[in-house]
Length: 383
Image 1 (cartoon, rainbow, N blue to C red):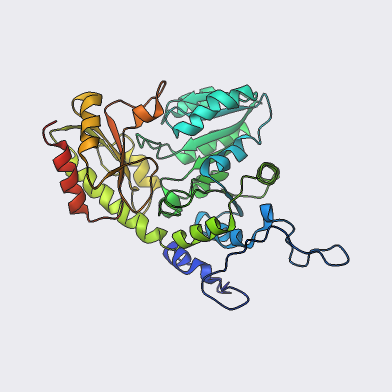
Image 2 (image 1 turned 45 degrees about the vertical axis):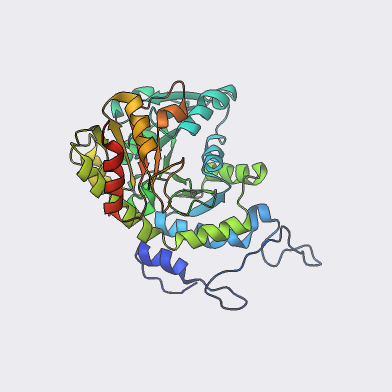
C-alpha cells in the first residue's frame, strides 16, 4: 500500500485499488489464496495474525479497505451476499427489540422481516417513505434499537433524507443502517450524513459484471454493536470465497467509470421518455418532476444512479407486453451490471407487494444510449 497520506479521489482509489502490490512478487494484481487454515508457531502464536479463513482470508483485505476508504468508515466486512450482510446487522438485535424500516424497500429483505424476523421475536414497524413524522411516531422509547433505511428505494426510487433519519436514530439511541447498493459510495456516503452502518449488495454495482454474489458492511466506528455483527459473520459462516473476493476486487477497479456511464444513460433515458405518450410516469430522482428531487440533489453528488422505473399506460398487461418486446434490455432480475435489464417487479414480488402493477424496473447499463432509446421506442409502439 502506498504511504501517500493525501486524500485521493474515489476514481483513483478504485482504479488503483489503493495502490497495493502483491507482497511476494510485487504484482499489481493480488494472488488468490484458497487456504482455509494457517500454521501456528511452536509457542502457539500465529505470526501472520491469521487463524482460519472464515475471518482472515487475505483476499478480503483489499476490497474491505477500499470500501472503508470510499465510505469513510472505520471497518468493513465482506459477506457471501447482500442478504447475509443485512441479516448480520438485524440478527444482532435481541428478541423483543424493535426496528423501523420503510414500506418500499428491497422485497426479499422485507419478506424475511415479516416472516422469519417476527418469528425470532423482532418487532418491526414499516413507515411511509419520506414521512419523517411517521418515522418519529413509530419509534418506541427504550425498545427501538435499529432503523433500517434504503435510499433510493427499490423499485420506485423514492429518496429519504438520511440526515433526518440519523437525527431520529440518535435521539432514540438506535443504530441507523443504510442500504447504499443503488447509490454506491460514489454518489452517496451515508456515514457522512449520520448513518452508523452502510450495507451493499456487492453483487450489483460494486462488482458490476453479473458474475459474483457478494455483500458488504461498513461501519462508522468499531463499537459494541459492530462487534456483534462481526461475531454473526464468523459464527454464521456467511463469508465470501477467495476467488469471489478476487473477482469482486477486479470489478471494483472499474466501478467509477461504470456508475458514471450508467447514471448518464439513465438520466438521458428518463429525460427522453418523460411525457412519452405510452408512459404514465417516469420514476427517476434526477428528474425535477420526481417527488424527492430536491433531497436527491442535496444528498447525491455526481449523478442520480443507473436505476429508473417506468409506469406504462394501459396497466399490467401493457407493461408485460412492453417487456416482452424489448430486445437489448434483457428480462432478468438483479441490477447494476454492464448490461441493461428489465423486470416487471409486481409479478416477481407477488402477493402483498406495494409495487404498482404497471411498473417496469430498468437497470441501465453502459451500452450506447441511442440503441437503448430505439429498443424502448420499438417496444412501446402500439401499446
